[in-house]
Image (cartoon, rainbow, N blue to C red; front, side, top):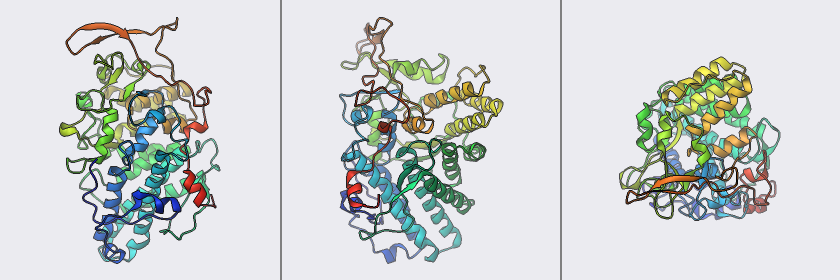
Length: 497
């Protein structure tokens, strides 16, 4: 794993014993003193740049590298990714024994990852008004800090408690809006309502601060990213009209890609449909390692562990450009697994990571319109996306629930592998659905594969291997197993929790 090489400055996030004892919170050896960091707006921006790099590319293990850890775990815990349980990385997330484990390394890492970034952004927000520099530069830095802080809290709100629409007063996690140190007293858990209020306030202010900002790369947060995050937020809180409006703004400058472009590998941040992502270079490629789980077709991919559930394939029309990405695997040891070749490495095994696309905004707009009762508008937006993928247009029932169901299926098809599986299950109070790939007699369904020497043969098709929660109970809505847990060390060290 490549270590971070281009962070100029990064602060130590240490508001709790968990944060200050975690080796991830050790500052780089070239850390400058805080007076120099916050002397100018330009130098203050390096805190955001350094935090963003660490947020994405650093980690204690190959299975815990940056924010991709959250995305991969979310998909592993869903319905459509059939994780190979004999592969390193996310088998325990797939089996629901990982994120529920309060003493495990992943629950510790994700918590520290989010709160470290929050604390660094709190430092920026609290000091940026007093530094040297133009007002426009200070607005840009403050706007990006507010948006990144909101993004971290949105992850906490989405994954550490059940749906806002189930109980907005449910407690989730602490809110910190001021810089903290090792001597700071830990706070109690805030309610979802309190956390979403902060998220919306931060993003609304960020939208104003970044209104005239033009970024130089898609790693940066600009107005489009802010409105995309607002669209996600309003979808979570059931503010359908606002979700529609925000999604429309977010996608305005990002047209849906041409059909054949869909087969390029989802590895390039310059794709015109990508609103936000994390670019990788040969020198700075830590997060590319997470791509080894997604890429099931490149010869150099180590793990190829995120295979597709065969029933997922049945959701697609055969003329859909995405349908062409499915192939039964004929390689030794992998025969009968279903590849979904959406993700493919660039040369030298690096790949940019996608965080937000306009396709997601089309889906948010469609779902919000449908839930708001505007089903005709919802179907029109949904069919724009379907048309771009050469799929059959939706012409079925216009009953509200039927249209919503179709949109949620389209979310699964379009956003496979991009980290939305678990958060969508929590948000909609849905459930994981997994079933054996067997016929009516309980026998494995046969499929045809092609071996490396060109031989075509019939083998057992292979799909999911975990069909219940660890306590052997059936998958169900609003299960404790869906929620990320607060680390035990945090519970022990913050008595206010």
